[in-house]
Length: 347
Image 1 (tube, rainbow, N blue to C red):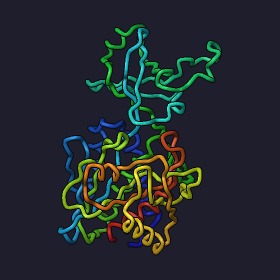
Image 2 (cartoon, rainbow, N blue to C red):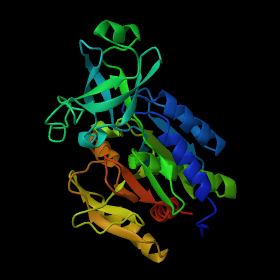
Image 3 (cartoon, rainbow, N blue to C red):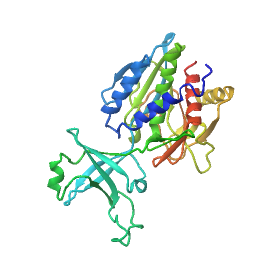
């Protein structure tokens, strides 16, 4: 199909903003999966939650004999309470691999197991230039940073009285912004931008009344950032399109305006015939695309293969600048990614 570039732009940005502003560090899936469920069911998909909190969305096609698979992940980087200091502040451990120096001074929210939310700020343990001579030079890592709570706490007992305990999630403020020039700026564009692409593709099919040639199964995972997101894959899938962020920098050719097609990452090459077919589809459609190799990267397709699934897989995604930090992409890259997803679905 010929996709109008502007027709679904506002739908996409509204959806991705909603996803980005819903906390979902790896393993904390309840809130974000309610959003995914609502959007999926509004757009003609059946929704099933797996035992470990991943979603399987199914969209009916003309043929039910084979199923085209696609996957993206809703889990994000985050932190978790590791210990409560004597003064009531918090030590933390990383969930996934956030760039800790970029978190110095960022706002956050602690979510207790009872569901209470307490705001705070992530800081260096030498936070004041007027007090510490190493305020600028002190290492920014988990041993040298902490969370200052926005509550009157003067002891570990005061903090525990709020309901905070070790193992509680600390969710980082995503600072989501959409600019008039078409940029999406936020933490966790990796990979909620891709989840929004897949859900928008379903919205387009549903709104336009398009029946794809084959059934479509979309797997939205919640453990990609720690390596085992797509360990489980539903039966019947004949190919898997991973949709995740495209890398930018160093000797890579991708920009924020392209759909990136990954030929190989740190786990090895992606399926050669499927990757080649995606390249040809991008060429024929006149999409702005780049083919790259990601040096320090793994995806849900790799997790699927490590779990033993005999399914060819490829990887695409909009180009994302400054990954695992303050990320940014552009609607041009999102649009090209959306178009390639629809071509993969055969429409």
